[in-house]
Image (tube, rainbow, N blue to C red):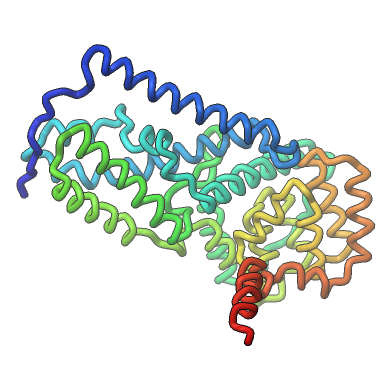
Length: 368
């Protein structure tokens, strides 16, 4: 298939004084952007500010995810340009040249709330796992030993989960985020925004005809989406094992605590999700929250006994560096909280407040 290249641009940048004016204008825009960021940051309460470590992990995971999606798209695109545009193919094939990532950083095209939430939960999840690992290595409070249920299905699910858990970290024990870890809707947005950045580069910097770029990029994005397997995620594997344990009656408090103490945090969250009847992402976010009140409500909602709940909350409070008084108050409130009220707190509100306000305003307008 031939590739049509548009007419060569006569100049890549404005000459002389015009170039300087353009640079100055971009610098002014950058200055305003920095000021807006500082304005937000300086008035942000400490309780709402992520730690430097968390922000660094989130940034690394973002770059890792976008880089992987970009690499997959470029690998599909490269052969289409090798015949008619070998220079374009060479750039696409080069692992040393980042194309989409700088454009996405510059434009903010991937400022996606769901993506940021995923990055935050993954960073917090990894911090908790590291804390649990330190507790286990200390040997002061060894994890309880439980024999696995004698069930072929559970054994197979556990084996698959352990393989998925190993893929969640790299050789340096740092978290890994792959495109396959994303929910389908979020993955779709990430793929098409990375694709749009690649298209922008091909058309703007390499003079590729827009129609040709669109055709090849659309096919590449569709191929990546078709290859996504939602059942291959760590969360899906954890849910399969937790569900099987539930069917066998083996998801008791001791096994829940055992999963946590082994550092199998996603399995711990999946067990809570199955018992509570909520999605695993919500359970993970609640369990990893640095304010243990959310975890306490979840534990109470699923009927975890007070002794086990206090041990879990104690370990999580230590990991989050919470004061002893905060733990004592939370443990005391745990016994006083009505389980029915805790379960009700897990349910989403029946109607969004904005929706209710709109309905009320409409009713006023319709009134005779």
